[in-house]
Amino acid sequence: MIAKSADTASATPESGIVYVYRFLDDGTAVSLPCDQVGEALSAHGGWTWVHIGLSDARARTWIAQHAPVSDTARDVLTGTDEHIRLDILGSEIIGVMPDLHQMFAETSDEIVRLRFVLTERLLITTRRTPVHSLELTRRSIETGRKFPTPIAFLDGIIDQFADVIGRLSETLADQLDTAESRLLKEGLGEEAQQLGAMRLQLAHMHRQLMQLHLLFQRIEPRMASENQQAARAIRALAQKLDAIDHDVATQYDRARLLLEEVDRKMTATTNRRLFTLSILTACLLPPTLVTGIFGMNTKHLPFQEIDGGTWYALAIAAGAGATAYWLLRRLRAL
Image (cartoon, rainbow, N blue to C red; front, side, top):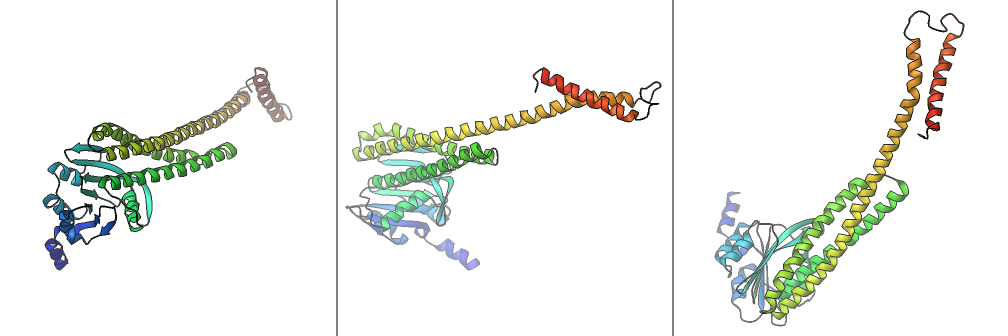
């Protein structure tokens, strides 16, 4: 155990990097060993992508000591702030973007953060937990997809995120259809809990998409004067995010309306039960009064000296209940 710790301490900062890709001028990517990151960054032509997992202390050391970016960019790359941001600082574009947590071979609906800094010839991305959209974009490189510029690669990541959110919205829409059909046909079941969870998930997705859309709208005019290609990519992504956000908002409204329908059904069921209980109470009050009178054990109570007096008393109690029921019907209370 001591030897392992010593190896970790003596390892170079570059060994903590997850991926290093060198992109040629035509967008073709070549995967490089992490210890060749220095040569990749100093090479002429093309651009370099460096991806870092912040859980590795060696990678954080590389960012602090060797990353060719500004101090502000270093703070963003290693920071803990969860707020979505996108800023232009000189020749750098820095940001914190949402992504879905990648769990082994599957994705989850947990939204995490992807941090990045982008220059004309460099893209550095960092994350604390594996992220889904970035992994999908990396796999597309392995299948031959080309990214001639860093902004094109970032555009691919956000586009993948939008697609995943769109598919997740479609899945939730199907679940809402199922819950609605069951609610209308079979009555109340576990729909309230399921709809509540779906509404919470949709609300979270809506907030992330809305913040991204507003960020892109804000930064697109500033970028248009400096980088027309980046501005066009951001404009296209903003439009796509707006369309997906509209769909997510629609599903959110459906979930809210279905929850209101569940509440109405539950209220109606409760009212029917209370009404039934009230009628039973009203019908039983007169017989209770009669039995209370006959249970006083005072002198001169009727039917004490008559054979079958108990049956007469029971008949009076039943008649009192029937009379109360008739009066309720007469007064249209039933």
